[in-house]
Length: 176
Image (cartoon, rainbow, N blue to C red; front, side, top):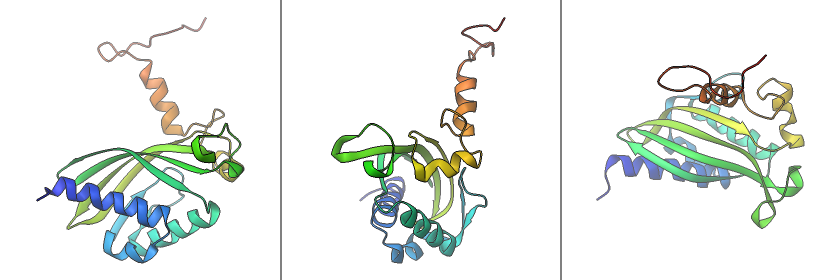
């Protein structure tokens, strides 16, 4: 028998593979709690409840009919699941070097999701846009990404990574 952490990982995998990738929105009520809150860096407002998730998934699938989210890694402990993922669209939708099977990388991210009784109750996602896609240009225009195509969070993380953990002193080149 699987423990709670493993069952929660399976629930997240089902959501990504069936709902996001296949568009099976009829499964949302069984996977998302009525009081769910999803925090997304590129959404103006939090995504709330099953209806909010249904609207969000439907709009993403309309905007990117060939969208595919691949789970690259998952770690679970008790009621939380951290999922590292990469979203791709068919190469014709993105202006980037082709990835295997004619797909181009679109963005990559990490989502930390909390589940209760097998349903998602909250999720925090951070992601970075990896390619220049006409469909994603609106994200950059809205200020979600910087001039290099990185989300604000990614830019902050890169800046912070230049500091040494012990001293907090910036490493690398100094400005004159």
